[in-house]
Image (cartoon, rainbow, N blue to C red; front, top):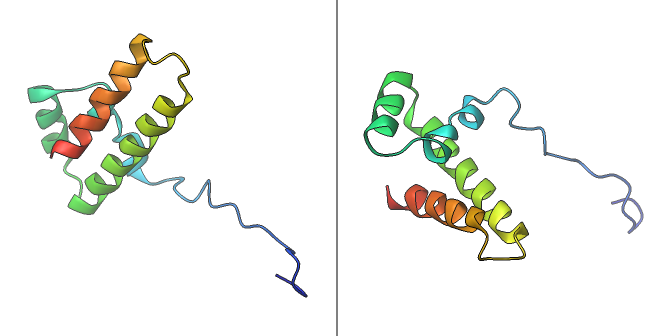
Length: 89
């Protein structure tokens, strides 16, 4: 703010560039059960990295679910599944 008026905007959209958590989202979007467990164990990442990955997966699935106008669309169930699985653990 400058003189009570907006003078600049900082866009943090690219703040996660280079964060491996962004790439680990596939653990919830494409894997399940034993395959997810194996992937997580073999990647050997710190717990906070996995927490950020889960948060990214939750954000993305929630965002995508909100964009679907016809909730009978098959993508709806996919995003709901991701949300459920991210929140379970």
